Image (cartoon, rainbow, N blue to C red; front, side):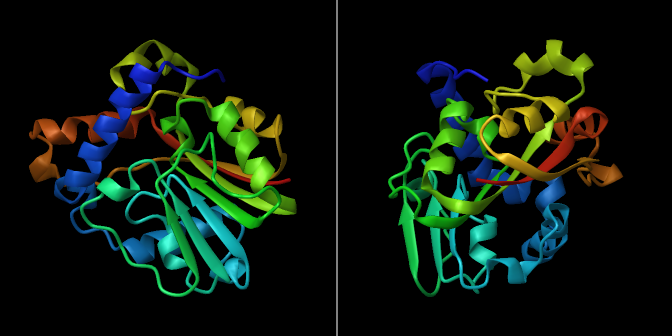
Length: 227
């Protein structure tokens, strides 16, 4: 998939920052148990928390509560996000770490220097996903693992993608797996319907409508791949 213009990407980043400034007020996230959430997500990749033990782990587009914050058994944790310095609530990492405000398309790391890379719900926020995948491949060591997740959509929803200004890019599940397969060896993939839990009492709120609509069309596609 080709990149988008700088203006389009910048607009989506402003929306991304606003989301993280207000996300705990949104109905699906008000009572979210974040550690429990990550413990339920990891099996989608066919791995457990032990998979990170002793490895140098990179999280690209980590956000303020990304998976990188919950793998404290890693040898070193690296988090990179273009908005990292702007998040109002940033979790503190313990142990060997590196935190950088940077882009997935230009990772400030040496080639063949990372054992495991995470890009969770982030590739579709980037200006140029193909360039980002190439950069992730560059920094991964031979045989290194990449864990990816994005929200995917059915083909019939394509005419409505313009409504989603938060994400510059959209894929069907097969198209996304194919995109990753151009750069990596795909080891496994799984697509499940995305379910945003919105209490009935809050269905009337305009802030809940996008999540209710999302329940009709959004899936989550998980890919585990190797360099």
